[in-house]
Amino acid sequence: MRNKLRKFIENVENSEDIFVTFLGWSFAGSVIGMLVGLAGIAFHWALEWAAVFRTAHPAILWLLPFGGLLIVLAYRQEHMENDKGTNFILIAVRSNAAVSIRTAPLIFFSTVVTHLFGGSAGREGAALQLGGSIASWLGREVELNEREERIMTMCGMAAGFSALFGTPLTAVVFAMEVITVGVMHYSAIVPCTISALVAAGLAKGAGITAPFYHVLGIPTEITLNAGWCVGLLGIGCALLSILFCVVMEQVSGRYRRYFPNPLLRVFVGGLLVIGLTYLVGTRDYNGAGMELIERAIGGEAETGAFLLKILFTALTLGAGFKGGEIVPSFFIGATFGCVAGPLLGLPPSFAASLGMAAVFCGVTNCPMTSVFLCIELFGVKGMGYYALCCGVSYMLSGYYGLYSEQKIMYSKVQPEFINKNVH
Image (cartoon, rainbow, N blue to C red; front, side, top):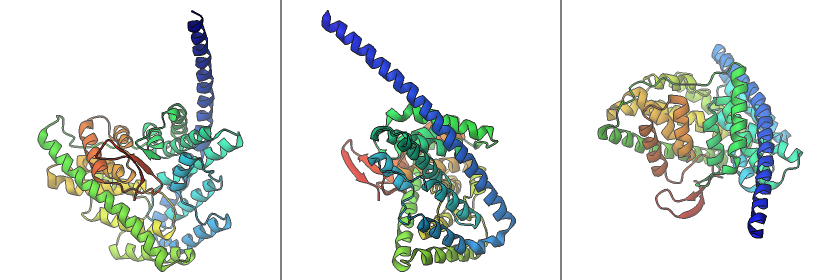
């Protein structure tokens, strides 16, 4: 009886500790959501202004090389020439490396400059750095321990992604899944969810509308024929995601080999983007390309658009310009799906949505995130097909990825521990 009483008392004390921890993380998640949400709103407005100004003044593209010089000099001024971008945020969570608060204004400024002058880049990757650096700094300021600082950084990642793209569930799962594939940090689920919801709510209150695509031609029933077609499209998306990762790595390596000086490298990269823009005769590949994604979901895409976006993005980010790789992966997948889908007997709009999610899955190695992304962007109709396409892309994309510091803990084909970095 005495042992049972002691165990009961210990359980009550532990329950109280858990409740206090819950209250603490609820408060912390709310604070991070507000801080990062406000920063994300300002970031969104700045990028929207940059896109509008660039469209109204197309000749500004000629200033892209000089914008690149500003970016390199800004990082040099702050002694952050070796900044690893999103990779460093992954390191910060996994090994508790300190992320400088200077990362936030630098990535804010440099991403806006890249978009303003016509570089091909996204924004969600930059939002991860923005949110992660703010949250990491806050964790150090309040003197949290090592484990708590990691959770704080994940909260910042979730809030930044959510504020900018308006998909809080996707943001939460992505923050927990992307760092170490195969090991989900469930201890962060409550604060990450709160921070993501607060950030998304602030963004909505500021008039930033979350995207929702009306996909046409989603099959109403599960059929073997449609399943085969979706599976084949998933294979194509896996190969395309590998191509994207390899081109990004190879172009970056060639830049560093032939132009070891960062100032010369970014200037030459700007000139190459200008030349390629005039060669293809369109500005569709400058900036993020959200309009082209919407057009592809609507069933319209140029045949080689996905290949050109890969090249434009690699030339931009490999040279030293800043931004994210996630929206370009959306662009590449949506345009590829729109073109390849009809060849497989799939409606172009439906195939574009499948490709958008599956290529994202292949380059980030985040299948659960990709499924939640489909729910928030396309709805639940046809979810079995989306899960199949993403699953095939995840498995067949091998151990490639956009983030070299990402670890894959378990084999994609066998239930065995491998603990390896992506290529």
